[in-house]
Length: 414
Image 1 (cartoon, helix red, strand yellow):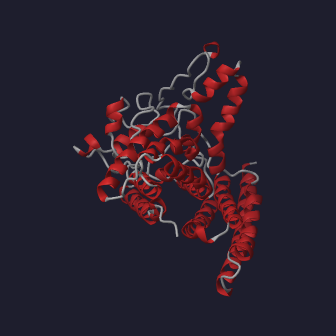
Image 2 (cartoon, rainbow, N blue to C red):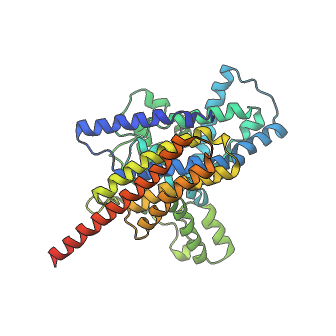
Image 3 (tube, one colour):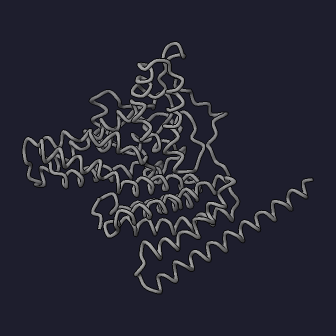
């Protein structure tokens, strides 16, 4: 059982998303788009399941520093935990800020900013590689003497706090805004308006931004996303896109020094001979369009149903991951990532999406029944196998119906 507060808060996250969906239905104000929300959650799923392996890098490294270099041994009393919570948020501010200011680090964090919507699902959109560039920012806490379990708990609570600030349904909150990060402050952080770029990096306490010169009040409504549109619903691609573009950029840089600067300077840095730092583009309301590739209703419904099943399976896996060996974990993670990737490419209507999904729905029951839970019992086995058969049949039927309609439409037009 995983006692990470982030994992334990999953039911609360989805309850709040449900509330936002009710608000959308009542007010008839479009807060969610299925394709964007699914991609947001897919990135969160990918980050959480791969995080099982990245724990070795983060938690184990913190423990090593604590065991070998701690100056003191701080007892985890209630008041020491409060101090640790504040300090964890302080170092989060710097890890977060540098994730915006260093091109290499930005590749891990950019995923969180790619959505062009702003709702609770965006809070779940996290980069799988971000932990690689941020875990060492917290080492001073280990040096001071805060034990690993206390650190994991308090830093987890700093993360959990930030879920509720990803919404447009809550306005400004008066005096609370003076000290705490709020939806208003964080909307600024997600804006790509030039005045909002790289502002309000705080996790819990907005005072860090006010102290270190990165605070910006919310004025006009932000336009969300990043300066270069991602244009993809594929959670694997969006995690690698920045690094692929970085690789292309490094090839264009002349000289080792320029290549290093490109990696460790701000995103958009270029040497003077290539034009210098790229400017932040202004928002053009007339020509600004969200990426919103439309998919047929039948395929959207299929993806939604499959996605609910994938979510349930992922939750079961995360709560019971310690019961699997390393190879089972790797196989389960691969299967989950294949599932969310399949949903993304179907929503993009990629040519290979149908074949990939057929492969997945046939592979899943085999892996689950014969590798992951081989002794679970005949009833569950029958249910998993039935899932594969029903999914395969539904996919074939939808594909055939869609092709028939498309051919009929083509004949009518011609």
